[in-house]
Length: 129
Image (cartoon, rainbow, N blue to C red; front, side, top):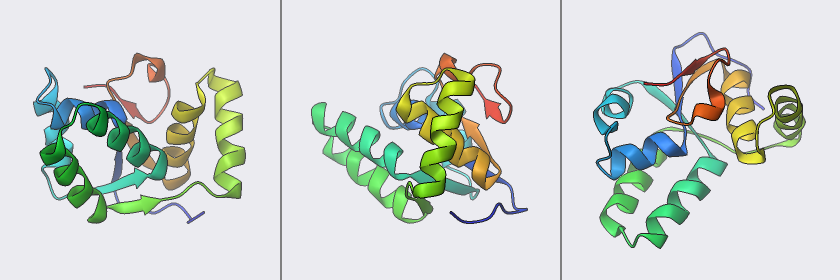
């Protein structure tokens, strides 16, 4: 796990990427984070979730856009420490496994988590546009 940074970081979760790439109702709100030159974290669990959704919907163009964006971002894999922090976040905040991983990674890196998922509502460091 990498130490937190003083730079402003954002982690857009899977729901935000899907809204943005699928031109959903909140696409513009997530575009504010994804179209700007901000530092983005992209956890491997988000890559899995977004990649799977775009394969299922057969949206090759959106998949290529996502992959291109992800390669220009800070990629984060789940390591031993993050796995433990994820388990703790899951128990403390009653989050499902993937949500707990995403939240723990955002917290570990000092990133703001940007999401459309109401399960994160009220948690510190979370932005729901």
